[in-house]
Length: 468
Ligand code: ADP
Image (cartoon, rainbow, N blue to C red; front, side, top):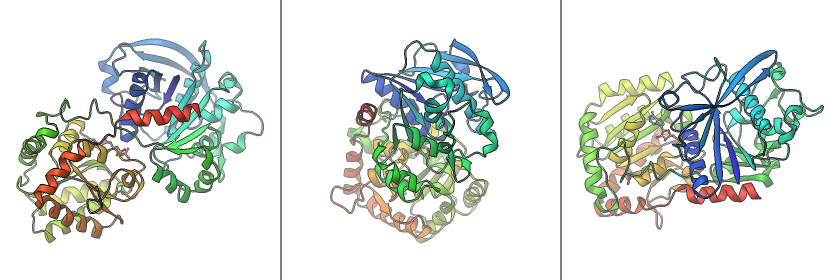
């Protein structure tokens, strides 16, 4: 089967969050399973673009309203990612250092139109066009109703929602950017008086998926106005849990790690990492280490961290370390930086994005904290499990589907119900209790490393959806 993935991000070309990880891994596993999967993304101005060789695969012109734009399809020369990677270069629009910017409507519209223009030139047609998130969400509509792309009408489309909070809304004043569409089809773009790309994809795609079943159910209850639509289209909606790329995320081979370990030497392996990280960040290596890694936004519960950590440190009399790696809202960054002054030796933070450090933290930590308000799937808890780090998670979305509380039969993590300071503090007490029950703690650690969250199962679920 030939599958074309369209996405704004793809690791290691450009990654802002989990979307990048997913689109960097799923096509590779699909190719390994015998399919022919490709990724077509905007040519962002990233390190990967400069460090690799590209060939011009195609050049063409498109119209964005009254602007004529020239585009070039660049193909990565060596197939180094395990799938064919194509980047759409539109000078001045796609080649920015930032993946997301203030004129995303125009940038991503141009990318989608150029991609469809190119696909129409192919001699054969792919079996499936798989669109990821709102930046590619107008594609299923345009494939059905834009006169210029009539040739693609019978190609199947799948739309995957990685985050339902961002829907790509734009005013009707931007409608002139779109190619000519069939009369009467405008209604499929409209939601509440605006063009809503996500709602059009939910209506026009052959199948709609999101990255866990629990999140799909949550969307049917609360989806910034689209909940009724998800319920109405329930028959074609599916939950497919993300996998993790176990060829990259494996503490036995991870190229970012200075020391490697596996289930046999998990305790010694993690101790080495913890010692180094504690030295680097001036933390007490005798204490359990709880880390937070992620975007510092309310969605992730990051606004709760500074106060909750302060209280937990006070209540436990400094018997635990906290380390935060992330960037995001200014006020959260400032609060987390200010806390350093008051909690020396047991708390620290690194404000910024650092892929290498994140890998070392998954290896060094005893626990990972995820107090998310919304978590469609969540990859951090799956990476953590693979690295023998126990997840402390709020019961929501994919966290609910992948973490079982250690108080339950067969459980291994810490779960809490509310995204509140209280629940974070209580969970910290439970983490300490578990940490000092060393036999149980070590047994859980070794066990969680063996869990299978690889892409093999998830890619098989996608195959069924493509064929369904
Ligand atoms: P989301 O896509 O909502 O941000 P996910 O859990 O799906 O959340 O994916 C987050 C990914 O981004 C993980 O690979 C995580 O390690 C990584 N990540 C997030 N913030 C940072 C950061 N500041 N430095 C390094 N990696 C980060």
